[in-house]
Length: 286
Image 1 (cartoon, rainbow, N blue to C red):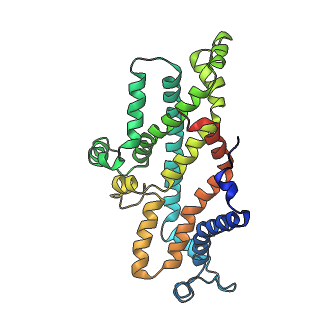
Image 2 (image 1 turned 60 degrees about the horizontal axis):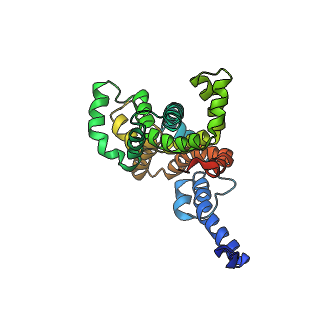
């Protein structure tokens, strides 16, 4: 006998109202932020929740945030660091996850649990020895050093997700590739890796969002860069927030918030189909 699902007992109009209210709760702050970025400071304080006047749109707030607040430099740094980190995380994570999932190697389970330990321990606990290691290697205040730290920090998640994906793929496909003359790496590259594409995309999206908005490591490892050659957007936004408290330049601050938020929204909206497909295809199955 089929039991009715809990959601089936809720009236449709009530469920629709709840979903609409939740959507409004999430979307309205973003709309308000975009409106405020086009206002002068006086209008932000005088009419905080009103849309900007059509004849007084301050698009100059964006140009000032891009040039005067050096968001152009920070944006380039964030793109370079995020892209490099995601490539390393996906590439190295796929190789490690495939080896753990497909081969019976000595200490393979221990290695897998060591990767999982990286998900349970706060990364902040390692910041002191990490700082001295980066300084000894000459990687403080550099984009390369920040990229390597983000890659190491993201590998446990990538191995956890991708190893489950590779375990869910039929072993017969790997055996067929070997019989047809492929070596181990060719079988991995040509057969197994394309089949794990939903998992790769899922890892890439989550890591992109995490690295793009990460502040702690960026502050600790590039905060001493007075020239700002390696600082990322979260640091630039924090500096702009502190400056705005003294100069009353909240329009530029909101413009900076929009510049930081828009890339994440675009990536998520363009690739959300792959996230759903990746999760439902077994990316989070053990």
